Length: 299
Image (cartoon, rainbow, N blue to C red):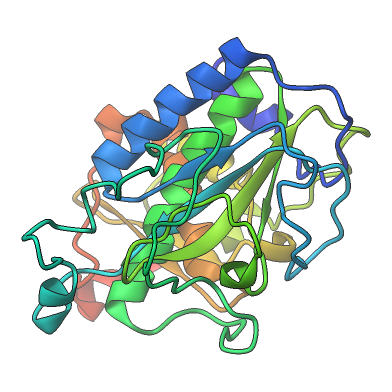
């Protein structure tokens, strides 16, 4: 199964059977997670074969059953200033990049929380269901969406079902299965395993509502293919809060529009777009492109 086929196959599945995931498949997923962490700077971690991989925590949206395996999409906003000093312990070690003693590596099936680690996980009480406005938070959410969807599609290629979820108050779990270093938080979680039921019907907005091209330009085949792939990307409540713009010079921009957790959804859509269009065809435009240039494009 190639990635485009995995996109078509993927559905949000919230009910799973008790059938364990084969160790060989877990090893492949772990390797993918390690590669994503290396590229992105995220701290994605996997827990498998648990009675309840969500540890009894409530999900922000949707009801899940039989979740024995989960991947925590963990990261932190950009480093800078005094925050850097806080990330270095008394021994001169960077606690953001060096595992604490006794803590398993990223991607391992059993992960403990290091002593005295600051756990800045998602709190429903402080989370607002709207697009982020802080540039560092926006960048983190988009990165989580991009690399989280890469991991999710790899799981689908391996014959598994997946679903995105937000866990409320993840840092209050009595026996957490993830390690959070200072400044890190669990942005989203991926449930995975063998689905107990098939996925429902996929909904989508018309392609024309999700992209803009310059007046008078015929939509290039590669751009259309990218948009068709982006339309298959998971977003909260299937709102598809993103807009892709093609410019006359062949560059592309993508922005989040109004919607729940829009920047995570944008990251998922950008990964899909690159796969569908072919990465060799995609030249991302600086997000600070001038309004005059953008005005030359139409719905």
